Image (cartoon, rainbow, N blue to C red; front, side):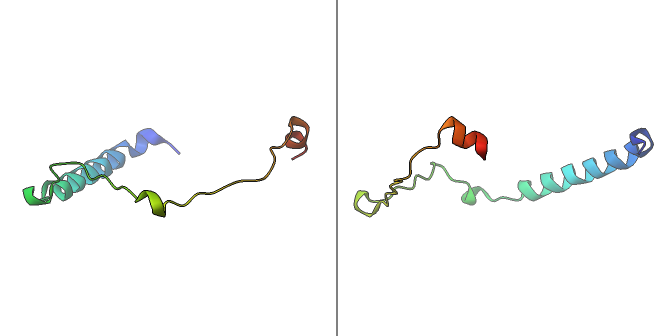
Length: 65
């Protein structure tokens, strides 16, 4: 496939995508912007813990896979 032959179409597609993304992100109202970052914290008592009891593979076992 000759890319030089299709450079005009590639440029037009890139320009259209850039314009569409600029229009989509420009319409965000000021009230929707967050002033402070949102931090999610789980209560200490409800935290789930996963314990893995399997042994690690040796180098010979890894090579056999």
